[in-house]
Length: 140
Image 1 (tube, rainbow, N blue to C red):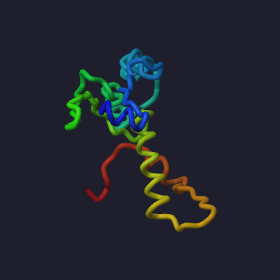
Image 2: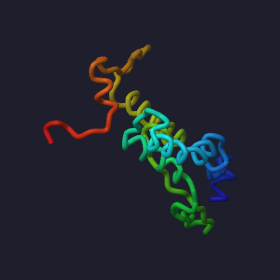
Image 3: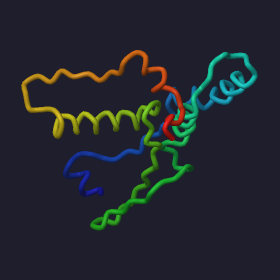
Image 4: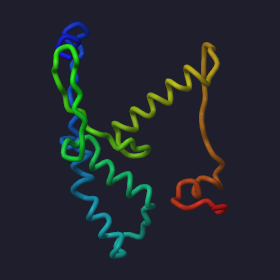
């Protein structure tokens, strides 16, 4: 890996989410939020999927939550690569990766090759609240 880094100029550096302001705010306040909701101090309902996203975000990118050791066959250098939450709604790292992958798929496989590609995705207003809630399909 060191020889590859010398030829390309790219060096892998593990991201450290635990040092970001967003991570600190969520870590320090998520239990307080849950407690306030349970006590009735805040009249808000957090869907199950949103709770899962927040809790997965707190585990994302931390060595203590799991990692893989990668080793270069040529130079025998090894690196630890942390597991990610693969979240869809809250984790900036995983969401950014998913947005890039979706954009690449749209450009390469879906949209026609034209000079300008305006597009947007939306759903009808009556559906939006139902789509945002965590519930089972009525047919299930």
